[in-house]
Image 1: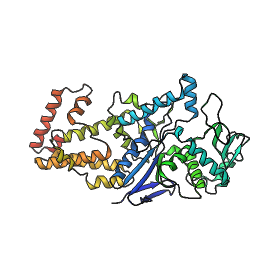
Image 2: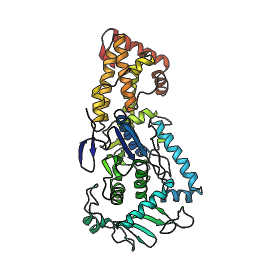
Image 3: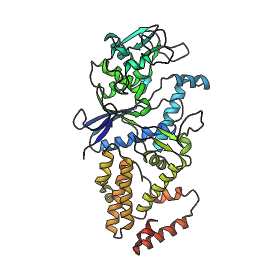
Image 4: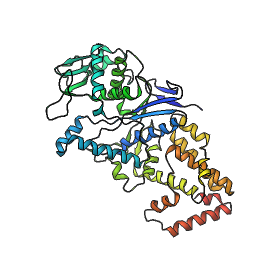
Length: 434
């Protein structure tokens, strides 16, 4: 089967065909490092980690996930805490990567930081001015959205309607309410870089355009991120990059994950329902959180609740329970292949619920199998599927030793395992599954 992805720009699921045969480039908008990551921030990291794993089975992938370390929120955090900006960003870059690592997210091939690419941003801004797509006004440089006839194509918004319906206070130096900042002046106490337009710092949107071009080229295969970034961030990225590169296609596929809510409410500081990943992993295994984030299709909303976590823990217990007691030597495990229906599900627009159902099917067969060779083959297949999706990565004995939360003693667990084996031997498979 071939890979299909839902392309936000086209508004439909499409056959995936990379620009270069055998090679794929993917860019994911990463964190703004002024605070710890919450569980909503983790959803795109986990979802597109799975996509990266799937792509690597077929292609040579270059995956970039950026770090935004120039931002007004970072500046404000420095003011609030009295800590230098470099200290704040260094702390939260490390924390983010540690937290995502606890969820089984692999490091990207490239992790570009905005502060290390200001020269490229200044160069791109200069190109946009020279080509008539940007203008300087009162020490700011702004992108002229009316100069881009395709502006609004990604988010399916009509520019004229956006301008007519603008309710924001419009800066007097803007030609149009929707014009966005490429460069802005910096006060002496804020980070700033020398530029043709005076000391200042880049706008948020130009950062990703410049970093993507630097590391992946003018045209990339996949641009990924959360649904909340479609407008204005990705719309503005698309406009900048296309106009700077004489109309060259910026991204061949735009792939976005859906929103995450908390008990059917939007997660927000004002509601006090923001769950930080580093707090959650103190009491919940990272694999449980990962599976919970993958339990719904990535494009659909995901409602996060205690029940979501509980169900994910139960699923993993079943997977680990199925492979527990099956002794595999290294060669046997390496020979394991994930079943075709499992791979087909993931290659069909990252359908993780269907892929997980296929893993359950293997687990059921494994629970019913009585012959040693068959059990080993099924266990190797289940573990191979786990490797692709990033689950069942622990030793089953370690998993159950740390997963009972004190509810079951080692003796209780051993007793239940013996009862399951007895049920299998008597071909009472319903009892064994239970």
